[in-house]
Image (cartoon, rainbow, N blue to C red):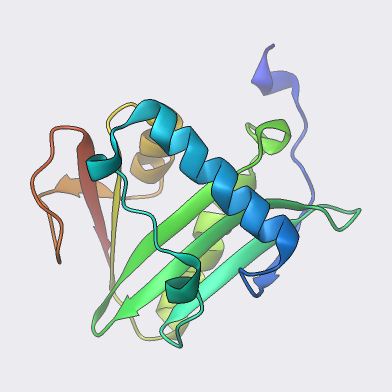
Length: 159
């Protein structure tokens, strides 16, 4: 299928509780996808209880029918923040949803006075890597508690 012919998907994006049943299902789908690509020690998903912490902005994109189609989280860490839990449902991929979630997370970081965003993703997550590079992220070494991992790509965006 040529994704260039698929029209953008209209979504609304807002903060939500990650414990909603439809969101929990999406988070599990993302974890299963990662587990199929990488060994457990190379997966760094924040658990549900951490996504509910006060320093986390957890966003959900919903389509016109109210179905959750994507998630993303911003974890505030002092003068920098980390992007976590970016996930788009299969049927919504290639329709601009991940870029909209990422742009909303970047805007949220700016509103919080953050000028540095960091993230970790996997080496075979080609669509994610391309999105991050298109939006100004550059590769860097491990940060915070991450260790060097040949299956991880660490990135940063500064403004």
